[in-house]
Image (cartoon, rainbow, N blue to C red; front, side, top):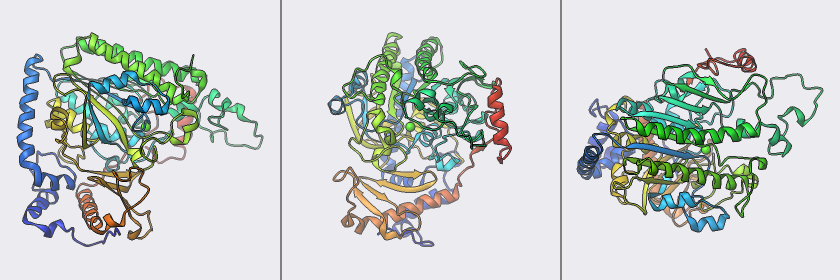
Length: 562
Ligand SMILES: [Ca+2]
């Protein structure tokens, strides 16, 4: 049904005078030079709702100004907790805890105190989702559509402007603790991307939780460790990754240092457990420190659990499910409870916006170990079905966000960029020379359901557009080389599992999706995608171990970096 006809003009150019003027604004650069540039789809909506939105913006500005007046002239603190690989339904909904045999009482309580977003879309996997949040841009726009699973000599480019940089400009203290996963070169590290201080692992959990002797013994991973066998014919001792850098810490403008690990040491599950515990401890310590300062803070805590693959991590199993992911989630839930208790104890409840969400759906290849399985939506991490890109998300801000409410409006992880900026009185620091996919959803946050500004989401897999959600419908594009008629359109309410594409919908929706795609690609042509940052792996670290230096030399002997 779906066919992208090259050279055909989008229908919006002929549909109405309104659409023409709008197209001029969106595509010919007649928009004010200091205005944020959004994707084309936004302008279609703005043309229909712009008047109401402008009035709402005034109301929100007044509300936020009133808040600052009561808060000694300061914008609110923002605490952002991003949980890894957790499908919709796994936290915040007690009824579903029974189905899973899991326990998330603290998060459930937090959900009761929050606005719960029923349609929060993310990117399909870790790196892309994190990049989207940090830059307000789909990662295809900055070369980070793919997950980084090994040493790459690549990262979020210095030219990208992160939410930490935007809030720093507006006078925020900024701290990042935990998983980062946006590259292994200096320019991509959080303390070089707007954070005053950062404590984080260079890599993600495959390299931290799988590349251990314990994972090899329990068969969670096979063949990597030296004990897995003795292959006398293997000639290349660099084939299996080694010499990795683990946890590092850095301050804005300074070199980073690797911490808690010495030359010749072997990385084990104990190191991984200690790293997780440390990030929790550091989050509490930072909260206490930041609470005393005159400036507002932006603190983000991106824990690595519930990704945990080894049963030796646990003193006891306390869920009936008993999977390592489900047990880990129970522990994380307790940790999150500690953080919220500390927020309340420090008197920060009413001047701190707290957002908790997951970055993408479950790591389904390890369901058997983790104890998760398909819940409401089909698929998991790296798919483009709803199970990959639709997650639980909650926002709490007593006195400003009404507690215990649901919002059916669509929201995308990039919207946090623009919304946090607006709530932090920092919108003027958002760059205006590139497409910002994030939309300002302040009215949805503060006035609740029915005030969203988005009814669409583009879903990329790597750097390929694979799916488009518009309203309650979802288009799955044909695989490369497949004819347009093999595109599928689903009604996500009648068919949340995306199992039965409906020709009855495709009859009318194909043309509209075709227009959407063309507008999106036209805007991308006008504002071309930027390259990824490239450099020598582990640049900007002052105490590299000899084994890491050796690994970098081997990498540089063949790579195009530098
Ligand atoms: Ca993830």
